Amino acid sequence: MNELDMDAGLAAVVAYVREVHAPIAQAITDGMPVTGTDCAFLSGAVEALLGAIDARLPQPEQPAVALKAVAA
Image (cartoon, rainbow, N blue to C red; front, side, top):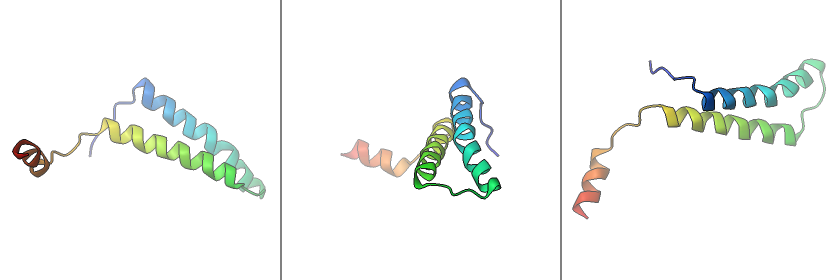
């Protein structure tokens, strides 16, 4: 399993996801409607979180792509 370094940037993104998620979770708990805007904010926050995680994980080498670039 890969470990993530919880640096300040990743911590800020996680905090943002929690901030956006909290009112949605509360609305669901209270039986209130969740708007499309709420979903859009959460979708953007999750996309930022996934991007931040991806940026910190080792990227697999793609030798075929590298060889094509050298050969070109």
